[in-house]
Length: 358
Image (cartoon, rainbow, N blue to C red; front, side, top):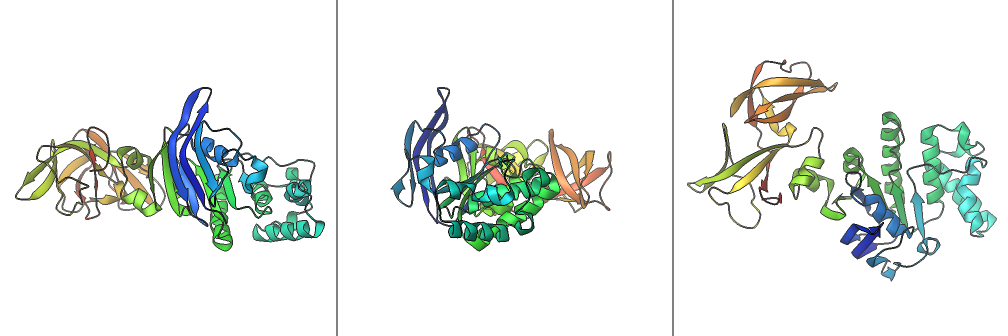
């Protein structure tokens, strides 16, 4: 499996910069997820790695070999697109073997690779069927298998599960994770779905406006977001935010807003020490709030969203709409006043001017 090195990459589409000076290192055997909203440049980056679009500058290397201007055929990649892109007149076996036959691979080798991919993806009973006879999940497995038969150095997956319903998406997500564990392959996976990113990735690269906002393990990106964009993008419901300021007295910093105060004794500030009066934004995830415990404040419930095994409880916090999680059976009702407290889990603080983590 190949390591991928991206240095100062720039991609322009229609004369406009989509990716501007991006640096990224992907270790051999890693499952890296490119996560971000529509239009952030994640699919463009993947297509640039595949050689499907030209770059305006920078370099791409696989295992130290420059591939910036190499043809897609020469890059030894396996690509899975959002659309299945199967040949409708060919059987599953024909679709799996087409690329190998086009390359002139020996018949015995083709048969062995197709059998291996079919076994890994549970496609053996379907090899004689055509795409029209397959379900959406089966078609996507064939598309993944067509990439796997190549024994590529790097596998590039462009939102392969986005066209599937929720149950199929969850099932194939598990299959992909197991597949990566078996193969130990280098995989770069594009998605806007944070659940896919958190469950699949070795590391997540969060992209916004063509730049990497944060690169880290799923746990780090979720618990210690590098800036307010990452904090707001990760999590469902999203992180709660409240503008306020720091107050420092007796060596203990506190976050202070109108009608709200939170001690920050255990908070790990980045770089400079906290400054009294400094404007900041507090970030608290819904699961960090405890309802009904002796709390820092009380508020009135404005909305309840039942989610099956829990409820999302919405309420007002110093003029901002916040959410917390509650057990579905014992949850409060709309209009009720509830006591709230922040748990001991680390909260987040962001600079008011540029949104970076404080």
